Image (cartoon, rainbow, N blue to C red):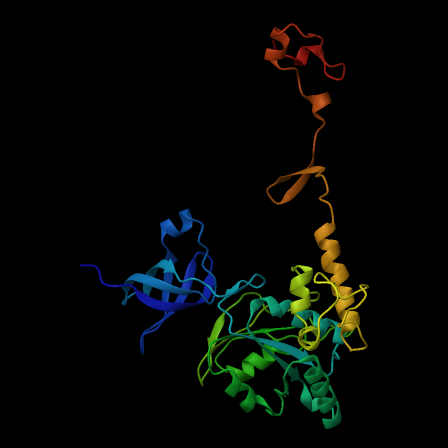
Length: 343
């Protein structure tokens, strides 16, 4: 009689293997493969997936993933599923915060439907007034924030208490201290850290793959590759819903038109002098331009990892035998030698 499947979480993906931590006390992690039937129906397994494992080999720490539970959300880049919390890491200095970029990350996280917490790193490099200013600024935007320092350890305790359940993904620009922060929260993790470019005052990418790290107080924390410009793959309606300021204004009143874009329409209750309104207009133009941009006709063909130009059929294709038998002209194309045509 076959034993019932075991439940577990995918901690990391390594080539065609998956590290799975079982929901059993004191159970070892298993290095699993994917059942062929999952591949046939196009089911991909991501870090953070809750899966069923069959036929565990306790001696060799092996198993096979037989099923994947439905996901409540998914981050496409990096590919992580079932995110409960997004940890947006922003440095207070070296490099200094860019409000427009911070706003992009916050908007990008909105469609996930998870909690968002902004963490200010490098607190030891600024004074208390700067920390308070940025904290009040984020609170006006509708978000909570917390300042930490991996050098002095300040703020790490309260931060760890907020991450004790679910899956948390740390994201942000390169060089803001994400890897150092995870190293401080999960000392057993092996994370590469890098220095800031002295020429461009920007960080270098140090994270190469995605992995879940168990926290001492519970929950899992994942690092993600640093970004320079997160994309906004959403509709204008989703963009509007991503701003707490817009939602708050619509709760107090209604726009004159139900399809108001809060840009130029009369009777709009959203337009105003709130700080992130220019950010909203910039993002709105971006998503509208992306949705209305016509598709460009390909002038190349894809082959393996490089592109080759398309050949003109009129000059390089010989006439079909069927066409010739139907009584049409048998004269070959002038651009092709007669000796090269077979009848």
